[in-house]
Image (spheres, rainbow, N blue to C red):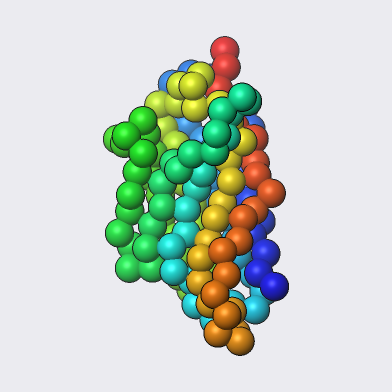
Length: 120
């Protein structure tokens, strides 16, 4: 079993900054990609950013230049720093991680989500 627990999020004014973090725990042998997705009301879940174990990051066009994803492989954590936030960034943000369990079984796990609201 692999668990992902998100923290951070909350309410911020347009133009402000916020950071969300995710910690993976459980029977983890190795983590491959870790990433953040978001889902706004009435919309499909979409990729925000993900990052390989080697640190190569990939961003949605809508957040390029504003968001930065980073990870700490020793701590099995991934962080998303969000700057210049816009009302359209309001969504439930989910952490996702792919990897192998200690039994060498592949897994793809999701966190429960953390709410980010951008509003004046």
